[in-house]
Length: 336
Image 1 (cartoon, helix red, strand yellow):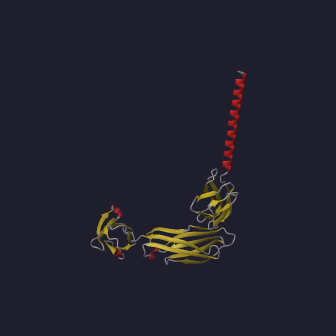
Image 2 (cartoon, helix red, strand yellow):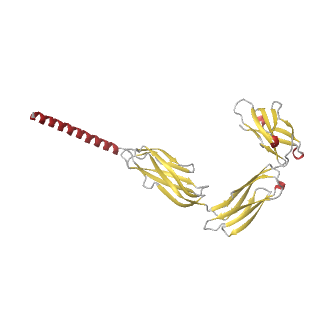
Image 3 (spheres, rainbow, N blue to C red):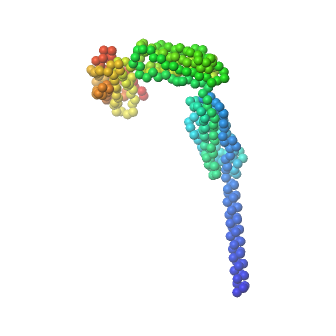
């Protein structure tokens, strides 16, 4: 009996030793396998560009290293927004070698604290999405307030005045040397509020001489600053005549062999109560249907329009009972 118990204990001990040995070996294999993986590392994953002007483009190159034992495969470099561009020097990075990620951040139109991220996706099992960061403060070294002028619907013939302020925060003084206006009905007057720093530009529109339905113009300010030699301000507005007509032209585009349908709207401008007396299409096969929109004017449906180049230059003729606008012509234009 004693001999049997001894043999049993010996066999149990041997089995336990084998299990422990197998477990230890499995752990060693697991540890060895864990070491045979790529490892992406970036010593400086964040770049602070400090303070920069809103007109600048920030450029910076990040360096990533493969500290693992097998090749690192970078599958994608993904910026967090369209203002950031990132280019990768190489997709496959052998052990102990590096790759460069060149980034460009466009600060145009931005202000205040900025923090933009770039995600580097790779086959590193521990860090499959490395995050890189560009951050800093954007200042407006030159402010134009507002940067465009919209007069809205212009119904009066009296002069309309708007003001623009130009503010420079640069250490170098800025002076406006010339003002060029593209529209003859726009006049300007410059006032210096702080020498080399702050200006006010009065923009006066004289609607009495306007003939076109849409006002479009540009004010160009020339300066002695090498960084901002020109400051451009767009000026626009809608001239409300006796009647308001939309669209200015009927655009045709061929999508298939089927005739097209388009619409035109005639609304009251300075004349509120009016009637459409006739609508004449340029082709007898074109069908027009005029529908009153209460006191809002008229909506004209133009059907069975051929989508062809021959329509370019032809016009839809609309007759009204308004003395200043007895005939309205809306041209057709074919665009391939």
